[in-house]
Image 1 (cartoon, rainbow, N blue to C red):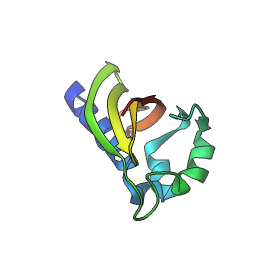
Image 2 (cartoon, rainbow, N blue to C red; image 1 turned 60 degrees about the horizontal axis):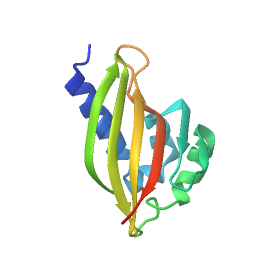
Image 3 (cartoon, rainbow, N blue to C red; image 1 turned 90 degrees about the horizontal axis):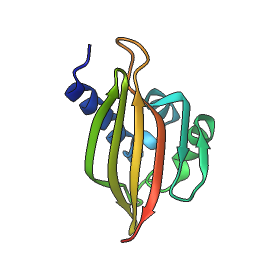
Image 4 (cartoon, rainbow, N blue to C red; image 1 turned 90 degrees about the vertical axis):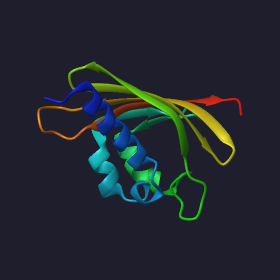
Length: 125
């Protein structure tokens, strides 16, 4: 069974991988990190489903080779229940700042941690 600290570390590692442009351009790598029931409400207010994210992520900000990348800060996490971790942090990319919140779940012992929900809210620079 994961300790809370280990679960939070694994969720943070997954979150940081999802900000890596090389990972973002690879639907097969993203598929390993997103739960099939994934939903996101982006900083634009758009609601993204799992399939939409897999299809469009390679071409959006933070994914483009030699383009701006996400710079995370103040990332913290807490285990809300066994198999459920909540992360909060801030990002900057291309001069835009956002506050972010993610839920990571692990469906069964030995299963991978995957992002279940993500919310981004624009923040003043």
